[in-house]
Image 1: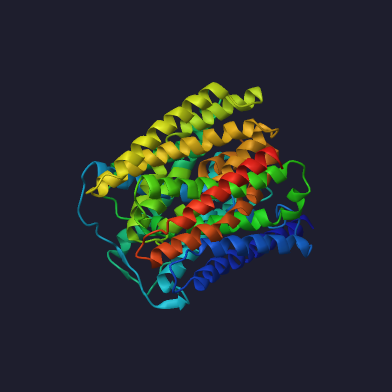
Image 2: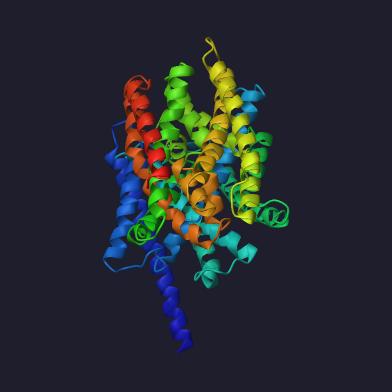
Length: 512
């Protein structure tokens, strides 16, 4: 009988694996279909479909909040670090190329097949999307197996999930795409998988080693290691693993995150204190996104998408905008710049997580260090805005200016926001959750998700993070209009949205 039960459970795992594939991949493809022929990003549609899917699963009594009945789907929502590692590596390459004056064309091993398999998605893009799903599951299961993380209901099935994921990722290569040096291309894919797993394992052990001194989540060390590797191997030509995760890793993670978040809609609205979190998160995204863009437009004198999109992705470590840039939805120059501009402000996380870790120990925000960081952020912001408005700049000078602006604005957004929230009655753990949601911030999201601020907010973050993504109709509509307007952002709507956001965060803090 025990053997029979075990066999049934094994079949159930396979069902969950296939079901998750059928839930997430069509969601991404439908999103690409809806925006096909336009300059808008499919991330917006993924937000809506993900939240709706999670909500319907709970309303129809198929699942409970958190989707514990869909453990593979829940696993995908927790693979944020994997998608980020690839972004950080590419960012490290761009940093070395631009600031080291390393120029020259990079030889591509894969030439895409441009035949449409689904409206808005070519054959090669479809294969990259499906491969990213297998990679996320295979790499996550393998790393958990190596680290001995056995808290999940899936713990007994990590070996088979690792096998299914990694084997599926290796064999999924578009046979109609032109591949130069096929054996080398496949070996690169294997090497990239091994390196990503190695970074995950090393970053976990480093975070545990330094835990008693500074509470830094593993995502911080993953960023440092991946960026350093990218800077060292700046000439590295991508294999199938990096190509897939760079193209569809973030959309796949977000699809899982939004679905899990949507399942908690009714539960969270019934909890005391979440109204202020959601209010600050929604209006905070409006203010920090469009307020930063207004500064670049009105003071920095630049309306170009090549500056605004990667600049604000880096300035806020913004999940959706980063995904839209790296997927190429906002132009080639934005795609090249985004990984680097996301990387540099991440270095500031040493201060963020150390100050927040000490603050959690005492139960309230450390004000003096936060104010010092706020002043530093303001100085960097002013320098960046002064530099970017200077005429006749090349790519290198624009990037330098955007890095200064991004570093400064991210510090202001995080510590300025936390100082504002400390003036309300909101507890620190809820404040961190609200802050992560208010700027769609990858690092804080990953830190909260890893349990740095307690189990309660770790369970709620997928919902609060997802709900504030409903601001993205404004974000991607504005960037879509800019792409249609010779990549120049309209000025007045940006200012109006920034003012609405400012009024909203004041109301959410002092009224809600």
